[in-house]
Image (tube, rainbow, N blue to C red):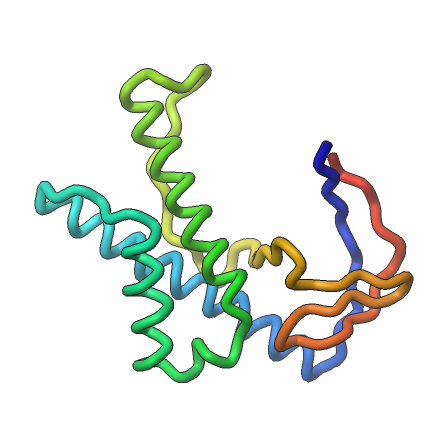
Length: 148
């Protein structure tokens, strides 16, 4: 059984800047990949797989855009995986494979909407009163609330 927790965090000013940069990079990767996939779809071409998108929008983009190197790569990869899952759900819904209501296509992420980044695996460490996020640092937390 998987468990998910929500934490209230209290970052300092430097960590707030790093978290905002992380959210912006995740949003950039999502939006640029979505625009590319929409362009391919309008031209009648098939959407590339996750590995090809990772090479193009994370690996090659880090060589051109130096600010992408300043954030952890795991949330960027998770952003692409989430987009891939959103497309899969949309196309399955169009084919009638999914149960329930029709799923809409993925949307662009906006700066003013809810910001998020997912750290998975052993990439982060949780202590009794701090959580460590790579390239952000140790952030003060309050006791977790179990969500699922």
